[in-house]
Length: 173
Image 1 (cartoon, rainbow, N blue to C red):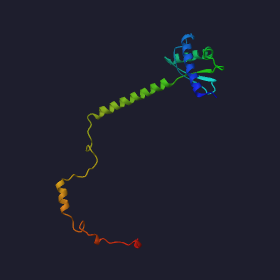
Image 2 (cartoon, rainbow, N blue to C red; image 1 turned 90 degrees about the vertical axis):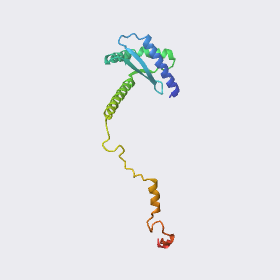
Image 3 (spheres, rainbow, N blue to C red; image 1 turned 45 degrees about the horizontal axis):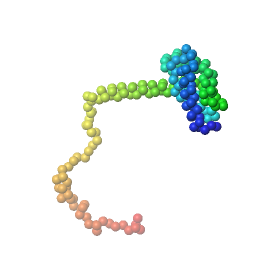
Image 4 (tube, rainbow, N blue to C red; image 1 turned 45 degrees about the vertical axis):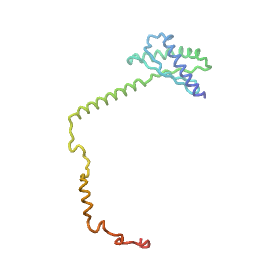
């Protein structure tokens, strides 16, 4: 098992080499506008997966995949010459789905923006069906009324002395 840092460095180097080789060495007419987005190498440095995107429609993607599959040997030998490692990893090309996922997310966000705009337009002239604040609040009294309430204390409530309160013993509980 190789060092993970070495595997990452080799993956970055493979991505650079494959990208440059596609640009300069591969002259296949089926190859469209290919962008190498990422490369990953297994822990034992025996296999490398190269991710790519193609600008164009489905036929351009299929043609570019076929061109990359046929150029795998040339690209692998180029990687071997330029890296100088003992065992050159086998190259596997995989179409990258990240741009498609990003496009789907952008479309979902755009639909949400339109739904929010529709809701805002519907809300413009709307009024509450009941009160604006549906929660009940206690009636507010004036300060003068509070003072008057203190003067008129009901008999037997606040003037009770502590002697009138029955005391229970601990044994009765």
